[in-house]
Image (tube, rainbow, N blue to C red; front, side, top):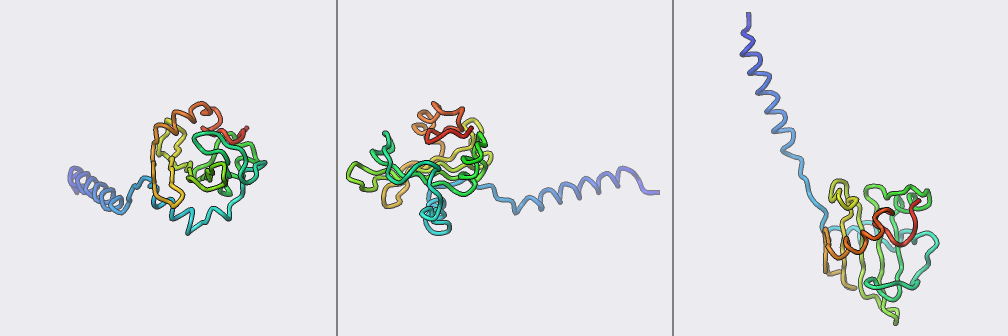
Length: 163
């Protein structure tokens, strides 16, 4: 008869080996501004996205976003807005083109919802790009979070109501 200790040891070793080698290929990465910029300008060009429902191009904005703004949203974000979902789904992107009064692009600001990125602030990843695409700020940007906390009951969004 086989000793129970040996069976237990073998099973334990197999479990540990399967966990170790099974998870070895899992790479957890956080979003980054450069990769996101490539995504929104090359892989899924934001100019092909919908505008925020009810908003046009270059409507009056407020600081820090500029005198005029245009807001683009991904399909899943658009559906959440139209459906009054109350919160944006994972993978949503809200992109603002920020213009000066002379209608010159000054910056692009982005909110990207990434699962488990920042649960304390509804998992938003924030990015500010210069007009030429250089990352000026990214991640858990304190200034963005502090300002948008004024609308945390609306998923940190000021542009329109989600309910």
